[in-house]
Image 1: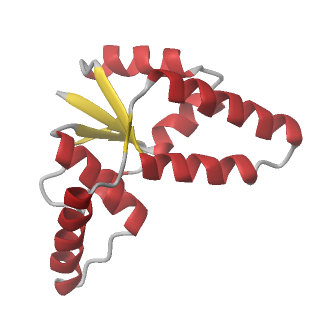
Image 2: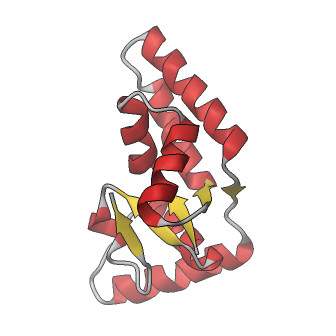
Image 3: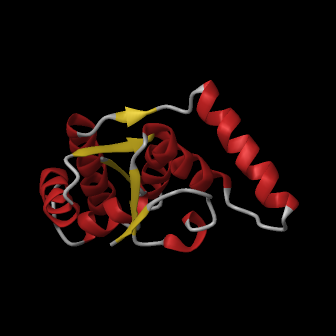
Length: 137
């Protein structure tokens, strides 16, 4: 089985001073998953964080981390099948009064489409996605 990384897992590693390779090795040891991936939506969240950095040094550090991450982890796009599946889940959950933020829904559905689990420090929204297997870090 594989593992899709949420931005919270990536940001936590970067803040602890780990590089992407260390993050991947740590997750593989911790979870037993050796196939790791990210959603293109996670990249959007990380790029947002780069621009929100409070110093130029911090911005450069985040950019280097992201560049290295992109060299070692496959990025999965929002495909037509993924968008349709997310739309169906969103329609069903909202009909039941449950609202899942679009970014988390797309990241979670990426994991579902790949048959992977999702690694996150923030399970709050992801636990609302039916059939999504979560690894809480």
